[in-house]
Image (spheres, rainbow, N blue to C red):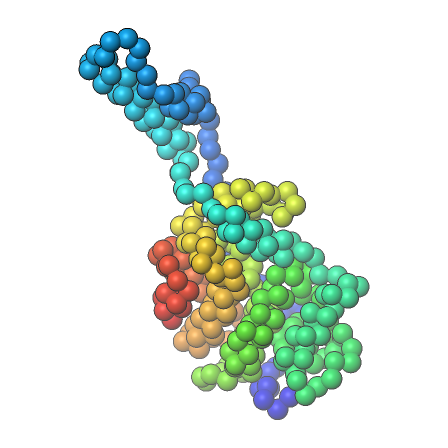
Length: 303
């Protein structure tokens, strides 16, 4: 394709995927308190009552006793490292489950729906070239590591592929600009577009806490909510899906643009892909932790 710049051919093993350290989940250590928080919670729910003639001293004593039990309950929770957060809405829980389900869905070359996704991605990247065979050298021009994209996708789940298609469908100009490396002074050895997209989707899962939340089939909506609530970045993301069902996909687009800008600002080449990803990950964590209330605020802070 004439618009795609010449890139040096690389072997399938040359791309060193960024080693993203997994965020360890919050573990609640057993408390030395003799009163479990569930018992304290039950006690705190008792109604304040006083039988017999009204006595102001007894009435105030019952109020103080009730608040003391509540305070003890909260003290036990905080001593164990737990934090109380607002419950997520059904809409937010459903969104988290959809994201996790796509992330854990394995790509199957024999699945006609999965093959159709690849075909649609080809059509958007190479509109003047017919899609004749799932395996082609042309895939390398899109930034896959070999002639068969399924090899890359199998290790990342279908979420990355879905995000690439979202970018192509909803933001076609950005898609073509990033694919063809149209901005700035480019390196002789550029980062691979498609594989970079898979890395971004994986990195976002780690930042918001879903990567370590187990599989979609074994994790309830409440379990996913607890996973995202463990970090400020995860809680920031939860605020975004409350106002936008496609917050993850939109964040993917913004982060991809941020990656390209960071690549240019560092004057990076192929072997610096990992360090560029680390810089971008740190900026995404800071941005999501800053309690952005709209996607526009996220875009402004990512730059």
